[in-house]
Length: 240
Image (cartoon, rainbow, N blue to C red; front, top):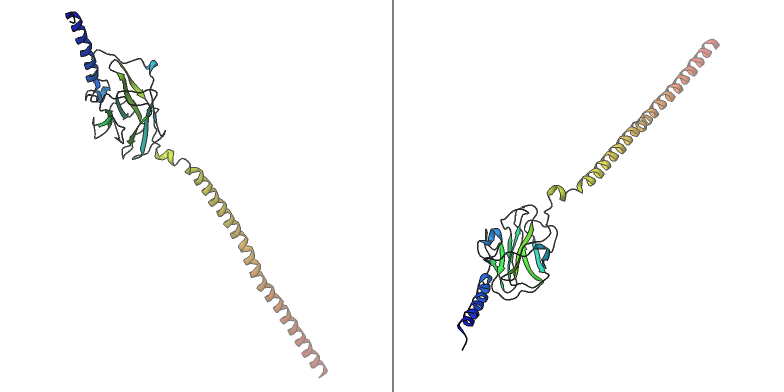
């Protein structure tokens, strides 16, 4: 027969294990939507210096409506909460989809803006999640996660590198060079046209000068003919 004190010790241990499982068994509580702190009463998060996890995104930039793949590596885990946020903000943004098994979508501020665990089964390192950016720009974002290996061992503020949303001015930053080249070409073309226009009057002047020369030449010949006629008439008068 088990002594009474041993029975209570076993019961305490069993209760503790049940409490550990129940603490994060069915997903992060709603209170974690903002703080991202799991409902593990009496347990503090591990130091960030011992964090074994890495959260990475498939791109360092994003555009409105773009789909990004988020991957968690470094260690297996059992409990989780993953969101996309603007740096320094607490409101999740975007929509998650295509989550792996043993996880589920969670609505904190808007539909499916978070992902959490659905059971206590172990999730492997390399688990991937699909996130779609809002249809309107929100600026830079980052992925933030809380990851638990057990009730008493979890890490908060596991973040990815920031993803930048290129602004319109950044996207079109290369256009001024083209515009400069275009302006240069226009200027050069204008100069060429001006040069052509300057040369054209010379040609016109030459063309105009030719009739003048012809007129002078014709006048000279006419004068010479008249002179001859006058001389002949004068000689004829003398002979008479």
